[in-house]
Each structure stands twice: as structure tokens, then as C-alpha cells.
Image (cartoon, rainbow, N blue to C red; front, side, top):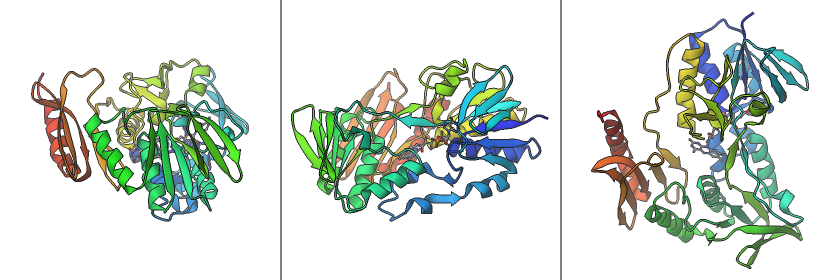
Length: 383
Ligand code: FAD
């Protein structure tokens, strides 16, 4: 009998399953996941401390209820070890699973920075509920945390740890936080306000060694300095989960390559979410995966829909100084113009007057809707 198997029950897998069930109530649906299959909103992992949330409180719907709601079979704690596209079977430690159509919603894994020292293995990273439970436990009694990586997730955790009453030092090679996402003036505004709120920045350098010292750690930096902290959190980036797909012979670049129908190089195998690369781009955020899920559900139900992203702002959850950005497309011509006031920065990226991206910080984030509207109108205008 025809069956749809989705591997992965993060936001991508579950959003797709829900959208698919709205269109097709009868095809047997199997959800296979390495974790316990509980539904949670991953963005909450980096603002849960300030809200005093324990890991279990982040679960909005337990796996069994999700399965019942979706009329699906949930195979939790069942990591897929291999995909055989010739026989249409998944190999798992619990036996084989047959599929007619397969969706990979495998997410991404944290990149481990190259670190020497006997404390390197104890460096934490948070990209799942299980990770968050370990992080939450490790923070008990911890007063000072070093964060490796001044990017989006590093800055969000810095703000959250500060709000939970801890001291925070952020270390990274960039000259400013969010260096890859923001024009310099906006990064500087975030750096100054988080700094005023208590974040200690060690930018322009990297951590090289982490050694155990008492109950904490000594972190040695490339600039010759050292800091002593209670815990070290790495937030240096994520890498799409591509190992299974690569081993199965699917086309893989940075992510699993898919077209505008979310179809991989293999017939009846699809991918979406953090593991997928659509038209050469991995977009590891919630809005893109929701658009992908909408299109893929329609495709799986027999439709001819194709992905065309709307304007999708990236919101950085740093309440001390909020940030909203729509980065210009890679290679897009244009220049930034910046209006910086005491309460925030408004930066617009324009090409011959036409808006092609923006970055807003602090009180200037109030302009978000107007700029999104202008960008959408510019994208819809004939070239
Ligand atoms: P995941 O949630 O990682 O799910 C992957 C699933 O695949 C899991 O169920 C896993 O168990 C399963 N899996 C993996 N390998 C196997 C295997 N071999 N066999 C079986 N199962 C497997 N985005 C925003 O837009 N806004 C935000 O504010 C925001 N904040 C964030 C804060 C943090 C701390 C983090 C880490 C990310 C944040 N993001 C945010 C990004 C966003 O959360 C992700 O893009 C999104 O959750 C990815 O969902 P996913 O389902 O693709 O991957």
C-alpha cells in the first residue's frame, strides 16, 4: 500500500505532516525520529531561561498526541542508519521501514569548533530539546558562561543568560556581533547595547583551548588572554544533516539539494527544513520551512505548486536591543544607507533607489512592516 514516511519530527517534519493531513486524510503516514517526537518550538530554546522555563515545560504536545492528531504511526528514538532508494527501505536499529514516498526533515547539527584541552569535550551546544535539558542542568550553580560565536544564536543566548542573572562573555573572530547578517552600524548598535546590559565582548579572536579548572573551565584565546568561567557554550553555526542522503547517493552540496518542488535528485524522495538546500540556498529559519512545508504538502497531494518565497525577515530575539533584518540576496548590487539614532539603527540597502534589503535595531524595528511591504512591492514589480 502507498505510504508516506517523514524522517524527522522537528518543526519541518511536523509542519509538513499537519499540512499534508489537511489535504490527504487516508494515505498511511509514518513519522520516524531519532528523538522522542515531542512537539516544541525550537526558537524558544534561546529565550527560555529568562522565562524560567524548565526543559519539560517547552513541550507543547507530546509525541503520542501528535501521532493521534495526525493519524500517523510515530517511531520515536529510531535513528535511521541508511536509506536504500532501490528497494525503498530505511534501515534502522529497530528493523526496516518500507516507503513509497520519503521526506527527509533531518535538521542540522552544531559545528564543533576546533578546540584543544581536557575541557573541550564538555563544551555545550544547544540545537534540540535534549541539548537544552543538558544545558539547563549544567547551568545550575553556574554564574559565568562563555559563549563561542557572536552570531544570531550566540547573541540570543547571551541576552537570555544575562536576563537569568548570569555573567556572559562572548568570544568570536568577527569584529562585530552578527557580522554576516548586519551592516556594521547595526552590529555596533547591538554590541553597544548588549555591552551596556552586561555582555563582555572578546571579538577579533577565537578560543583555542578549554581546560578544566576546579568545577569550571579556563578558556585560552588566540590573542594570548585567558578567561575563567563556569560553563562554555558553543554557538559557532550549524551544518545541514546530509550524511544519510550523501551515503544514499542523493545530490548534496551544503544541504540536500532540492528543486522548487522540494524534490531531491532521487524520485519520490523530498527534503525540507534545515537539512535542505533550495536553489543553492540553505535558509535555517522557521519562515522558510513553513513555506516549504506548504508547497511540499500540496506536491505530495498531487498538486503542481512550486516554491516562491515571500519577504522573510529574520528576527533576532535580543530583547535588550531587538533586531530585524532582511539581508540583500547574495551578489545583489546596491549600497547601505544608515540612519543611526540613540535608540537604534535603520539601515536600508538600495539599488538605484529600489529597496533590496534592510536591517533595523532597537526602536527603529517599528519600521519593519512598512519596509517589508516596500520590499514585497519591489519584488513584484516588473524588472
Ligand atoms: P530540527 O528541529 O533539527 O529537526 C530535525 C529532526 O530530525 C529531529 O526530530 C531529529 O531527531 C531528526 N533526525 C535527524 N537525524 C535523524 C536520523 N538519522 N534518523 C531519524 N531522525 C533523525 N528560526 C527562526 O526563524 N526564528 C528564531 O527565533 C529562531 N531561533 C532559534 C534558536 C535556536 C537556539 C536555534 C538552535 C534555532 C533557532 N531558529 C530560529 C532556527 C529554527 O529553529 C530552525 O530552522 C528549525 O527549528 C529547524 O527545524 P527542522 O525540523 O528542519 O530541524
